[in-house]
Length: 252
Image (cartoon, rainbow, N blue to C red; front, side):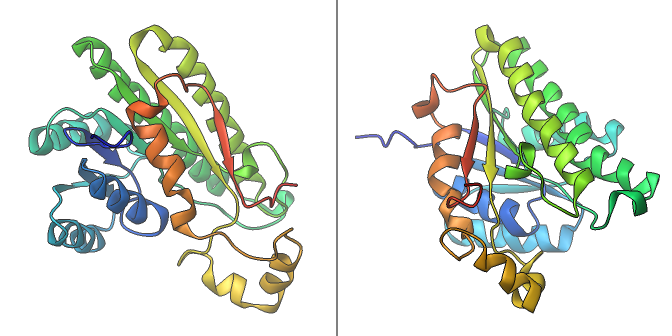
């Protein structure tokens, strides 16, 4: 019997796949049967992820991409499809943040956050959506948002603004493409331990922050696996335009 989250025959394009959640998501999707295009700027790290996937019996291709470069997006999808077949799953995961009080944030830093976290995902989603519509193929787009999409996370205002925009983009595209068979959803994680934040959460202030969470712990990357696979698979046939929070109760 086929598993409801089996992704055999699908091709997934994952941004920010060189580390953190992107790397983890790429491996999870591959283990579920998808061929995975590994996108990012650090090709050395992408090579390592590709090797891990292939050693486990999966198929992967490296697609170098800076999501802030609008002119590079269509060629990147071209390269992924030439290597692995038509893309029908997009994971908009690439993102960054700047830390500081809003009055101290430089315009260039604000622009960089918006370009990476919101403009890039919009351009990628519309490029993939355009191709799916032209081919009359169904697809799944999962935007990696945050609990910062709908609540204040002090010290990262540009990040929260970008993720709030990503959440609204999710719903707008879901409505626009509802009759095209393209489901667009957002996964809204809470605080998860990754290599990007491990030093902070090992500090005294970071430990104090963890102590404010209802369960006094960080979530793990693997805690997102079930929701990711649901949203990418046929099991989510009637789920579109949803903002799905997986935060271990941190937002309560």
